[in-house]
Image 1 (cartoon, rainbow, N blue to C red):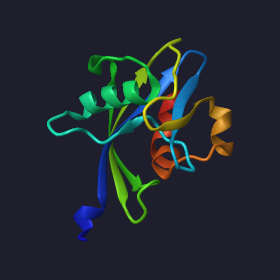
Image 2 (tube, rainbow, N blue to C red):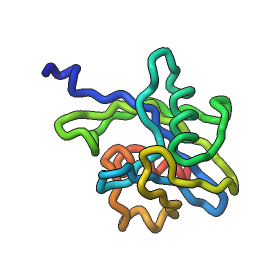
Image 3 (tube, rainbow, N blue to C red):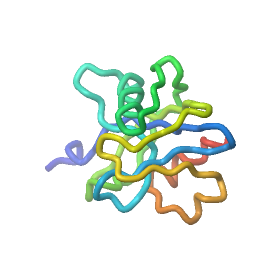
Length: 135
């Protein structure tokens, strides 16, 4: 396996809602929470992928035009040992929409800033993305 094979490319969303909350999800079998998102399908843009993944994982329906790009971030992959994740990240505010765990999601949580310290988060979430929820 080469160094290039050890990279996982994803799209991720910092989803915010009413009351200063941000949504994180825990995939089936995972120990940590992370922002909703996942790997783009062939021919799918990063923003199309994040809109699809948010809908599949949380039931929140948000069009690609509602997402604001944050940039590209890299950290240790939480669910693929020995890999690094490269994420095209976006923010989106869903107001008072209700999220429901779907697809491969075992649990979702709405966090406030004071919950971050005690929530098990993936490295990309903790080190790079979660803080954008309160900027």
